[in-house]
Amino acid sequence: MDTLDAIILGIIQGLTEFLPVSSSGHLELGKAILGDNSVPEESLLFTVVLHFATALSTIVVFRKDIWEIISGLFQFKWNEEAQFSAKIILSMLPAVMVGLFFEEQLEAFFGGNIKLVGFMLIITAVLLYFADKAKDTSKKVSFNNAFIIGISQAIAMLPGISRSGATISTSVLLGVDKTKAARFSFLMVVPLIFGKIAKDILGGELHFQGDQATSMGVGFIAAFVSGIIACTWMIQLVKKSKLSYFAIYCLIVGLIAVGYSIWG
Image 1 (cartoon, rainbow, N blue to C red):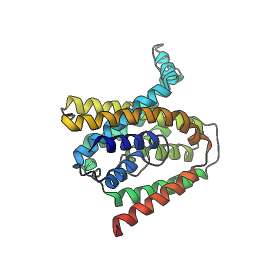
Image 2: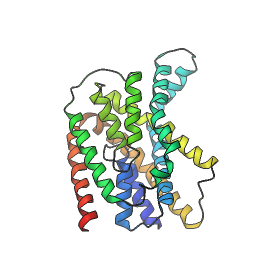
Image 3: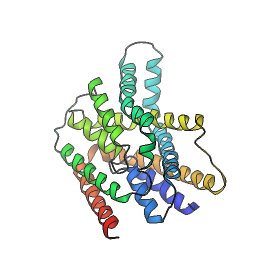
Image 4: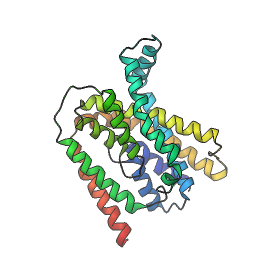
């Protein structure tokens, strides 16, 4: 992968991470269009690096929220911040289990299988469409909600299933306020990404050498910078705009991907 391709993919990751359109699915489509022939392990590694960059951008944008949560935890009371942190941990469990026991099977999906990505984008479109019909409420995320949302996050590890789309849609369908659903969705993934990076480092799976280190470095920077811009601007779009717009987009891209994989 050359430097320009890495920058393009980094920008794709940064721009699509915060919209319900599947950043991992768009990365796989981008790799296929750019002619990336990485083996599944290398492809997944690059995807993880870019997700790490957008996790950092999430921390930058939500720094005040994160600081309030941390400050509340140090009060050592069962306050709102402690409960929110417990819900985040609970939401992580399904994805952690999938990552621990099905990692090899998951890696196999990150090899440019655009037909799979297309079908998963169509599923995302359907989910967003039904979520768009849900009524607005002021309900907060409960512990039961947090675990169910976590299951959606685990399923969204498949390329083409939008993580934010799946988690926000699940939250809304459970009756959670859209603003609270978006905040929970963006914050719940941060510990998972850092945990994945730590696991790979301790397991010796991250090896940056030569051209690979250069491409991943510039991809990381591109994803981080575009992620900050996208998160600051697009999070308001996710909260206020109708999810049906994103459903239409995912349906169109999904159909094109499936059609290209069959006849292209």
